[in-house]
Length: 361
Image (cartoon, rainbow, N blue to C red; front, side, top):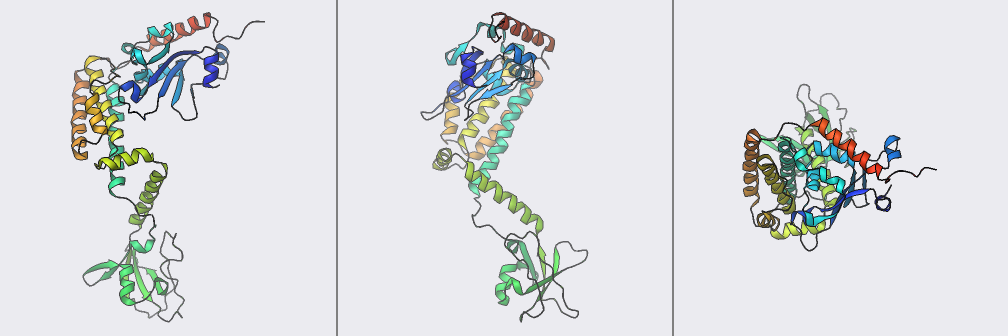
């Protein structure tokens, strides 16, 4: 089933503008996101063709089946509660049946963990993104040689530097394990190439150093330490960084670089929106979608704040949410029986209108 089929069959009972345009935070180039609710045809509901969600190819239009919509509302899902709290001027269509579904039926102290928890996850994401922006990973991938060090005098030096000092290459080396010394190896040199040493690595993609058979009586030229944990972490960071480069929104990235504050300003703008909404829900019992703090939020998006200042301010907001939850008059959980009764009556009334039913022969 497609969105077009939902419309043609009159199955949509709510359609709203969502996202930045609903928050009052849109910029001229912002997309228009649509969210809505539909009721599945009765035969599909009673049979095995239940569809919980339908979206377009770009996922900027998403419609939830009524049962799924209510299920997410009971969990105080931020995106779904925002749909229910959409300002009137952003509602494209609303069936009278939807009037019975009000935020007060669903708001509980769970919003501390949903709105606040989602905001906290965005803070973690912002920190990770800040790290990527500030610490780019070179495109040329390192080999394990960069994670090998040789004991030298009273410390250690990189293997590659040691090889330069000795005027040899890694293929002339032979390594053996040193018992009870994780990561440590005896390093032997085969200057003439007649001892059959395997070198430190055979190919650049190697994840382990090579071991060689060393003739008895040979004296190690040095002792080598391979930091395998460091190499493993580097491989993960390399993959994460270049996947991010591949998939990032270039226009958004360019904007972030332009303001020079080394953070994703849109990400942190929505972080503070979620934090403030959590406090409002817990203290007033209202879902305020059209943001009264628009100027402050847009100042974040335009890069007017320092990164560390925003992170510290977010931490303070998280503490405020914790206090608000303790003092909140909201219930701990929803009235499941009441909501279930409403869902049943909504479906019955909708199907009684003859919508979503196949005609009888």
